[in-house]
Image (tube, rainbow, N blue to C red; front, side):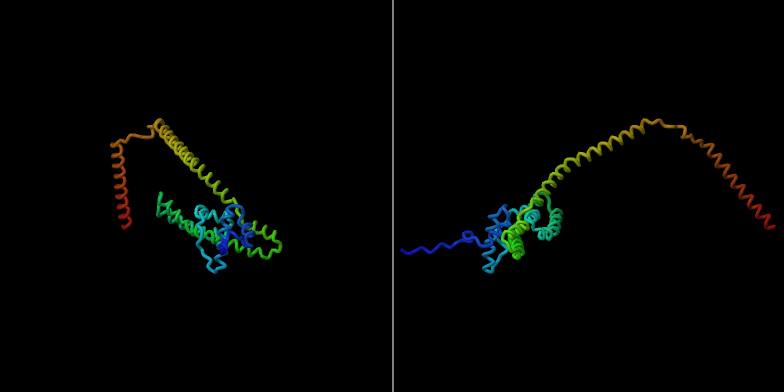
Length: 238
């Protein structure tokens, strides 16, 4: 009987010599996922058609810049931080409510598309840097140190969320308390002013007749002074 042709082996059936290095760099978290992605990129690279589009990375889309931090891709994180902040400001001004959430989610879709390729590039760069290390075990240790993951962004996000929640609870309470205190102080001042006796002695009654006599006397003095000035000038001329 005719023999069946051997089934074409997939990339996953025959792990390449790079797998140990990939595993050391990726770490335990989602290792098989990224290992499959890197194997596919390796196959494309050997065929000369390395693509930027592959599996959609949900973690990068959902985590955004935090995912780059989590995977120790600090250069990409810093490079993308300013554009993302500017885009976020624009979205906040143009959209509100559910529209703002929808547009913000769309804003991070490119992260999910290109994240695996960026991560593959970083991994290949670290592997090239480790080529000068003679011992294989030392090379594995170097890649494990430079790669894998860090939980710092998770801690920072958790602490920030707790601070935000506490601030949203405490600050309105403090503001309300200060407003109530200011209102009480204002009411107390008004009450003190209304209860304080008025010193009527400082208010003297106006006598219209007396004021008119004073004005007449002042007018007479002015006329006398003008007359005296005229007489003096006449004497001087003589």
